[in-house]
Image 1 (cartoon, one colour):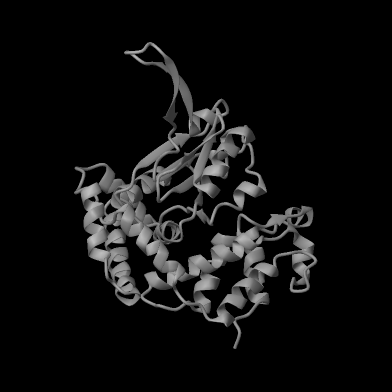
Image 2: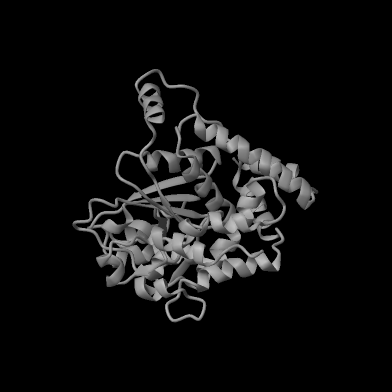
Amino acid sequence: MNDRADDTSERLAGLDDAALAEQLGQDYARVRAEIAKRIVGQDDVVDLMLLTLLVGGNTLLVGVPGLAKTLLVQTVAEVLDLSFSRIQFTPDLMPSDITGTDLVQEDAETGRRHLVFVPGPVFANIVLADEVNRTPPKTQSALLEAMQERRVTVQGTTHVLPAPFFVFATQNPIELEGTYPLPEAQLDRFTFEVMLEYLSEAEELDVVRSTTSVAGDPPGRVLTAAEIRAYQALVRRVPMAEPVARHALAIVRATRPGSPQAPDFVSRWLAYGASVRAAQSLVLGAKARALTRGRAHVGFEDIRALAKPVLRHRLLRNFHAEAEQVTVSTIVDELLAAVPVPS
């Protein structure tokens, strides 16, 4: 892996932003092709997961069991040549089971005892937090510092996580007994919330055929950690016209009850709106989306296409919306209609 990282550094060295953007587009297509060798359908989900990697964020995957959430995350890590770790969240999981702990070891020569840090499963490039809402808040919070600061603190000592670092957390939307809803502060750390739906009949038939016969060629490794970091830096250099940035901000500010920009239905249906972190996620995601579509500039369509995955988990409905059975997705649709594209 180190040899591949060195080769990557040499391959990207000296490329200007235009050439680097062209290379990103080619590599993005290769990554999608390799993932498709194992994952059938779910094109929008794969797109959002790869955008997560390009912006250096985290993603919450919501879907019923059996939709290949674990396999999808594991496949992405394999194609990108990144280390992968899966944590099954359960009610008895402790914070140290995630972060690691200090153990007492004895020196064979001197006989002295000393503390040695044993890293937990969070020390990987891609961490799958499976059923993250099935563990108590104390353990959930152990993931918070890792997601935001890219480090963990154990016994007063800070340990830096490997770079790049991403968390993909899963939730089951139908089996809620015995769960602990994620607090708003932790939900806000997720760049996107991605909803996984059932496959079409044709896609489901492909899955059944491919998984009940002789396995095909495994996905190939396309990118390295060094390459991903180079593309992440490129995303932040993508220019954005001020009207586009203002449009992203207008959508976010319109979600806040009591704000002058908020439509009447926002105050009726929402208790709290989105934070400034939502605007940051919307802008960064739009920049990455533009690059993956071969454009070196961000358009209004990039902003609006990502409004639902960016805002869906950040908007807190009030009792009026729950009583009227108004979903967050419906509220975002109404917001996009109320904040039209500038002429």
